[in-house]
Image (tube, rainbow, N blue to C red; front, side, top):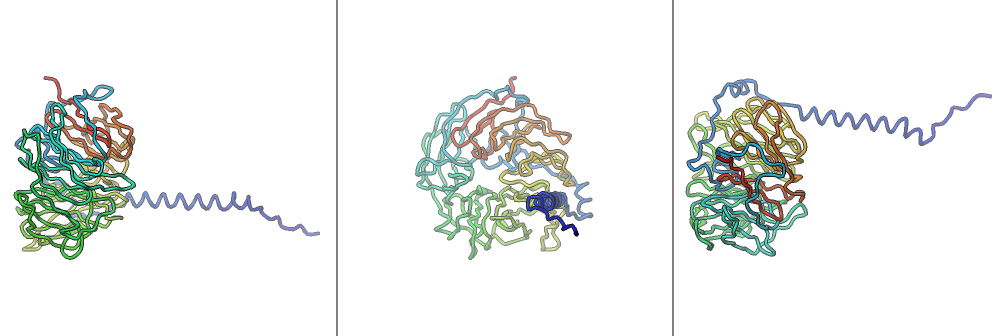
Length: 454
């Protein structure tokens, strides 16, 4: 009698067929993902030019111990202070003072003995000034506003100090000009401007997050939206609109000024492209498409001579553009682009030929000239970086605060300690001014003494 073929039981089919096939498909997807990350697009001619180009550093500010707003005097995240500690005690530098704060992601503006930040204060957004030496609260301006989001409430942008005036943009899109003299213990509102009312601006998914750029007598903002409301320039004394143009959706990246071929331009890293405009008129000079999920261009562009570095998270990666001019026409030429430096919420810093920043959750050193990755370091989750005296001050999303050498050879850590265990509240960039390091989460602002003893 012939033997009947044996049937595989359903459990064995799963073990012998489904699991191996699923594993093979999964490994294939992983391999494809990492090959995409390694993929680099480069213009051979332009890459050779950049390899031998003389890179120009930003001018050193006349007063090196101030930090007037977002990313410092040059908006580059670089402090020019010297005589700073090269190692910290095990439990961190000496604490000088602390103050309670509310939720929010604002960094700090420091000048004239004042430290200014913003946070949620009940039903109000508060702009608060503290004495830099003692931590005593000098004044508090409160505006009825609440931005709420499941990923974090409160204001996002960083205040800017310009002489006797302080400019602050809240999470709901209300910009305030405040007058507060350096030694005053009171503040007065000069003018306010509501993006929704004036520009019919749409609220971005994660709140209004860019810090306005003050350049000369103008303030450059990104309300975003159709009918010529994307970008605008205001008179910084009165808040009057000098021009408004273009139809771009807003992002969270702060505008920055650059000088190309001797001509100043204002760069907006908008929701779907990088745009350069003429400062006086807002006329578009050039653009470069850069689409990211939910318009999440967040990191500030970095201008290096005639080159611009941009980066974004959500697997979008980075690019270096050379800004060229032929006759009256501007052209952003792509030098290289890849997905191995994906700045999410924080911006990289540059020292010489090298960039230091977060590729998603990995602290990364990259050769700016070539795009080559020289090292990566885990252990911070996402985070932010400040450059001072050839050192990196690193603040991780997991609350770790660390000090490391800014060297392309390898990651060399000098010190670390846990500042907080308050999770995503660590997205505020630390600031160094006059030998003091200011760090915050959603509950407290702490001032550390990091000046080296003479």
